[in-house]
Image (cartoon, rainbow, N blue to C red; front, side, top):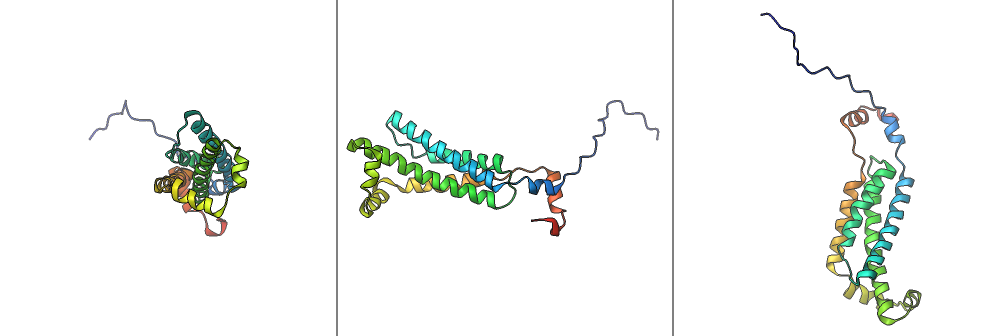
Length: 177
């Protein structure tokens, strides 16, 4: 059969450039990820304190908001592709959720008693901690904290293209570290 020239065919795409797997591994930085996640946790807890102080409400769900923000912070700052980065993000999100709950409770207690927060901290005893865990920290707070940790872990890994995944899988085992 005769074959006519195609007038409307797609132009051929150039071959994708090869990806250097070692550059992907070298781009990871656990130190930058830890610094970014701890900084974000502190900033988010300060915002939580401010928001609770302005509105006079205790936002249990705020820890759920901390999870993806900490996870994305770890992803962008650390550029991690291995298991350490989700673990770091989950741990920081968990600590941020509980510390935020504690700080908002501390602020509320100091406001109700009419004393400063350091004075409330000086008066903490084992009974105070038991009462806080029994009455202030609810099962919902625990569920939200665990969910925030899971969400942070999900968002913390760097998303790779097909070429990058292929380069990592075909990289010789002796070069991986």
